[in-house]
Image 1 (cartoon, rainbow, N blue to C red):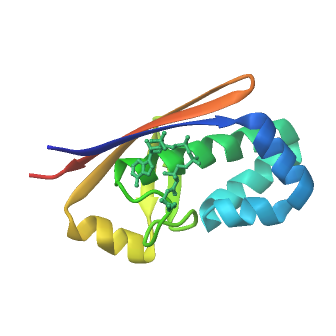
Image 2 (cartoon, rainbow, N blue to C red):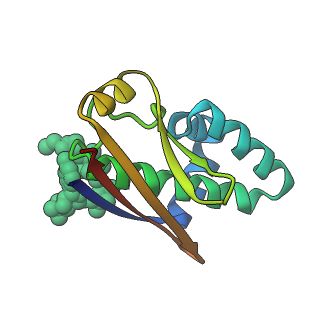
Image 3 (cartoon, rainbow, N blue to C red):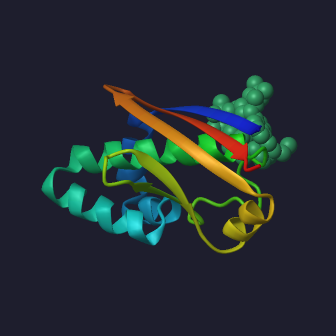
Length: 131
Ligand SMILES: CC(C)(COP(=O)(O)OP(=O)(O)OC[C@H]1O[C@@H](n2cnc3c(N)ncnc32)[C@H](O)[C@@H]1OP(=O)(O)O)[C@@H](O)C(=O)NCCC(=O)NCCS
């Protein structure tokens, strides 16, 4: 049964500006530890790829926060929601801490899709309640 859906569109130029203004501190605020390592590796090789990676993660987390109906309110936080990649390349959500407990207690499962093109990154998230 569908529990909730969430969508988000993120302006990549805003993410670029925040990174220019706040530097790595901005990435540290938005990204979970595993994501931060990937972001650093990508940014070192090609800064633009780092910006796009951060923008898609930003939009995915906002879409997830809407799908669970909380928005960015506890126990939903940027860092407790990690976007991972499955071996096939498909993105998936891995939760941590209090958010993971809250989510599992409700018997929920998330499905995520992300995309980006020139100035925008967008995500769509479906959360279902397991039977
Ligand atoms: C959901 C949230 C992450 C989106 O923020 P944003 O990036 O600024 O805005 P977006 O344009 O991407 O999304 C806004 C839409 O999210 C939806 N939305 C808001 N709260 C939501 C929630 N708890 N669950 C699902 N969707 C929500 C609404 O449809 C809203 O559009 P509307 O105001 O025109 O109805 C943010 O609003 C939030 O964290 N809200 C929770 C905290 C909160 O409510 N603070 C204000 C208290 S008055």
